[in-house]
Every structure is written in structure tokens, then in C-alpha cells.
Image (cartoon, rainbow over all chains, first blue to last red; front, side, top):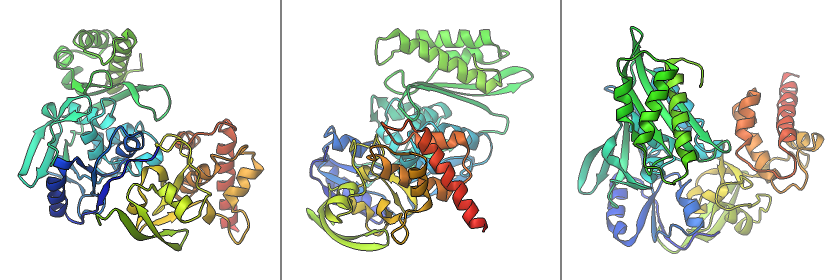
Length: 285
Length: 163
């Protein structure tokens, strides 16, 4: 359980980090932020990077601010920092609730939000949240900066649109309106364990009917996904257990799960119904 | 910084340790092998069991998921730093009094996790305490006595603080 040898680099500025990564990426050089997924993979020798570019000392990478309707999350913002202290209102409360499902306290103090996104584990809560909310991913390299939309960021199992020489320098989450209602539900076998299925619902209730619904599912397919057919079905309808049942059943037919176990699809339906019920302020089905 | 060996100083429990290690040396191994501080135990070595939990700048972290070189310039605290003048501190005493350990292998990690909890949230709710303790594995006690010991230490410390 010891990592293979590697060369270690600790840049102090973003420019230095990008230069190092540009030079070392072709030689299997990788970025390390919190390392809470990468270091276990190295200990198991699933990952054997020849170089690590440690961004923990890069000035400014821990920035976390609300600007122009976006919560801007820098690459060194730890899981523990993304809660109600970061942004007030429904988004802050949602982040606080979701954060509690991410591993354990000593992992949350070190692991980073952007690191989780770049790692793209299908069971990652932040990946589900970013997908469902329509986050923007800012990637930078010596070649310049580009913005990747949520629908284009995740490319499959632990695969993203990031190029080897790019650093995810910022996640932008849209600040939710005060009228937004959210529901998150995750099933995992043990506290802090990986999700078997997780769903996030964001909606408004206007004159008794659902408006602007967003529904996302994680840990079932090889990447998190918005369930747009179910969203279309929900819009304009009054919330009810029967409606949420119908939405979950609709979502199920389009799923391509990572394993063939029907249990996984049953779980998917259950977490979708529970997330929707929580968002609508109804008791858990 | 990219030489194969790294020479730097680790600050552990307020004391400086000049060490020379490969980049791949974890903080947990450096504490044990290079600083001679064998109180920090290694269980799974991939972040699951929590036996190697130490404090870095006051925050609980897995010492097996950090490279020693990353801890340069940081304040590390380990189980060796808990006793005060050769006497067990209130948390250590509470572990003994509440039978919060049996074989003792996981105990250093639980003591450091408990230290972090007592320092950041001494009036932590029962629910949050159980959630926080789910971070570390113990195969002997069933956890209830560990939770009880941390609560007892919090009570003892608030009483001491009040007098």
C-alpha cells in the first residue's frame, strides 16, 4: 500500500502551475489538490503518475465568492467550506445538506470540490449537483481559458472534457432564487460510503403547480445526468405522490445503469421520488 | 523541489524534525519512520479506517492520504502531544474510564478525531457526534463507549473551565 515513486512540484502561482502542467502532462504528470481520491488510487497503484503538480500552495486558489448571481468556487475550496457560510438562501442550505453526505469529516477538511468534479466519480454528490443546477466549468491552460457547460463536462466513468494540461480553475454554481425549493436524497450502505443512487430535485411552486423543475440522478449511470423527460412531465402539474411516481417511472425507462441489477433501477426510482417529495415539502414516500 | 529526495522540517507537537524523504513518503510513514513517533497507527493505508488521523493546522486529516512533503510549514499534532506533563489529558482519561478502547489499535486516531471535535464543537449534538465518529473504524468497542467518552471529556472540560 505504498505509492510508486514520482516527482513532486509545488508551484506558488497559477502561471507556474500551468507551465509545470503543460510540460509534465505529456509525461503522465497530474494535478493533486486534496488528494482524497488520487492518493488512495496511488496507494493501490491504480494510479501511477510520474509527476505531481501540487496546487495546495497556489495563491488565490482558495477563493470562494458570490458575484453576478454565481457562486464562484476556486480549485482549493474544501468540501467543508461549501455550505451556508458560502452563500445564503436555498443554495447555501442545499450545499450544507449535500456536503454531509460526502465521505467523513477528516476527508471533507482536505478534499476539494473542484477535485471531485475533475475526478468525475459517477457517485460524486458535487458532480450530481453541478449537473442538475447547470454549473459552468472554467478550465485554464497555457493555451488560454474556456468555459465548459455542465452537459458537456462529464464524458463517462471518471472522464471529463478537461485536457491533460488544463486545470479546473473555477466552478460556477447559479445562485438559486429565494423561491427555489430543493430536495436531495441519497442511498448508501454505510454512513459516508459511496452513493448507490442519489437524486436532486430543484423546483418552484407557483399557484400550486410545479415551475422550473430540475431533476438529476447520480451513481446509477456512468455519469450524473439531468432527467429532462421527467422534468417536462413535472412542469405545470400539482405535486402529488402519484405524479412523482409517474416521473420516476418515466426516468427509469431511459436509464442505462452501470450494472444490470434491477435493484439499482428500483433504487433510482426511490431516490427520485424522495428527492421530489422533499422539494415539494411532502413526507418521504 | 523536483529532486528525488526532499529535505525539510516537519513540525510535530511543537517540535521540529528535520527529515529527508522521497516525495511518495506519506505523512503517516514519516511520523513513524522518520520522526520515531509510533503513536500514529496505520490500518488500511488508503483512507478508509481513520487509524492514522492526526491534526494539521487544527483540522483532522488522514495522515496516509497526505505526503509528508505537503506538511512542510504546517503544525501537525499527534497522539504523543495529548498528555500534559506526563499525565493523561481529560479526553485520554475519559477513554480509560469509559472503556472506550480494548485492543487500542484505533485509539490514537479516535483520540485525535475526538480532540478536533472537542476543540471545534464541544457542545456537538449526539447525532452529529455519531456522524463524526463514523469516520473511524473500531472492531472492539461498538463505538457507544467512544461516543460516551468524548461526551464525558466535554463535560469534564466545561466543568474545569467553569471553576
